Image 1 (tube, rainbow, N blue to C red):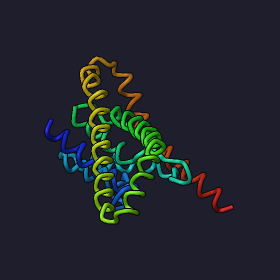
Image 2 (spheres, rainbow, N blue to C red; image 1 turned 90 degrees about the horizontal axis):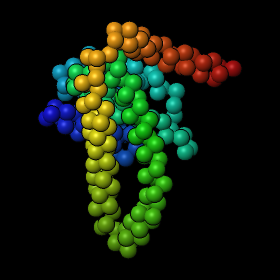
Image 3 (tube, rainbow, N blue to C red; image 1 turned 180 degrees about the vertical axis):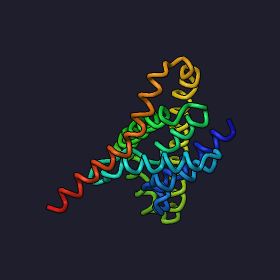
Image 4 (cartoon, helix red, strand yellow; image 1 turned 45 degrees about the vertical axis):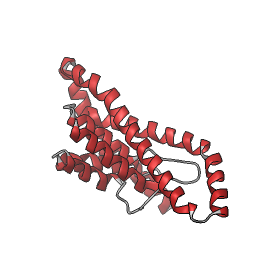
Length: 200
């Protein structure tokens, strides 16, 4: 349980790197995956998940009002489920679902946050010292939200799934393995088509 909490905490911190702080690319799947994998003692699993996530989401750019699925959330949820003894080939797809849901929640909250931002701007205009307090408050709220979402989603999915996995037929396991191994190829095909369009 302690490892799971630490994993969710690190994932929540790395997610801040996406837009809110640092922006040193720690939130990219290729970096977040191995870091999270090290925490649970599975660096190779983390690297594999990171590469698969990177390939799957590589073509999605945060342009305009588009917010792509979070690579960090995908890696964190996947490895949290893996730590709960769920095979990686099942865990990854729930990680992708978690990443998509997280992005939808983020879009919803950003729309609702406009009023709060306007209030903070007024406070900063009247008292510039309020700036650092405002930034720290926003970062802390985002960190807590990230942590709660990752932990809640991992628990909601992981606990029942861990009990259900042994009951699944072998054919379903084989289908899961095949689908998981197809992920990088799907990502590469998307990437190749993008390069072809840009080359024209």
